[in-house]
Length: 295
Image 1: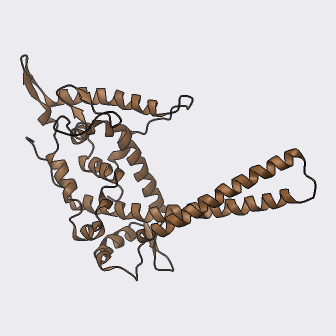
Image 2: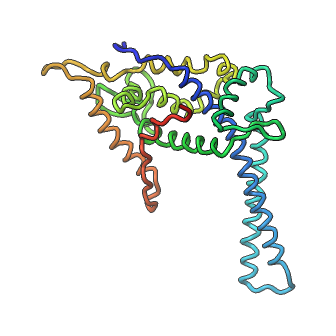
Image 3: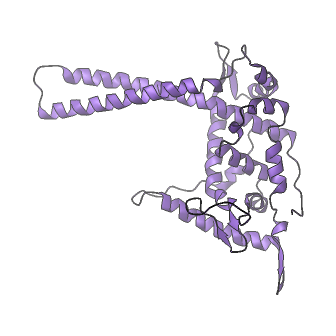
């Protein structure tokens, strides 16, 4: 049982996390729209190149090879365009129209106004909310935070404290009482807001969107109740302390050792996932997780 309790999620944090969720939803459509525009441009250019290569009655072997290559490229681009257009239709619900709010969306008006005031959203001539240039910057920072979370915190989701080992999603059955989730304790030790870490974990797993009524819950102020419960129930640094034959071992000493081992393991796993010939990319700085967006 936890021996300490962290403070509850502040109204400001709830507002910020809610705004980030809406931004993430809107970007699901906008990113596809940008991809469609790029593909349309590629298809147009490839069609012109193919038409140019087809000119004339006699072609050299090199010209025939080039024509075949361009045709294959054009075919792949058209297939990709078809897929993106399909995904756009599937993600149409991610858009929000100022004049056509569904009943469950009406409670989001205050949050959307907040995002407008912060300059991350605008309303287009078609009455749909659009992500602004500043909104794109905020979204990119969110993507950076998600990457940093995966690199620096995911490894602590399953820790066997008795054996001093870390669960491997690829080889271990991650069930039962054997495993402890130490992401909150690690965040506490590193001075990073544990609520932000849990928010990123749930967003990375798309857990918020598993609930079809998530926007209604967001408007009612209850969407983050589960997140709050998770943070309150997970082990803290103090909970990791124990007594052995040599005396009391402080929780801070335990978590330091766990972080040291986990950091090395996370680096090893990341390198293993890369292609042998690929140059290792620089790890994102975990301190990016400590940044807030609106306050």
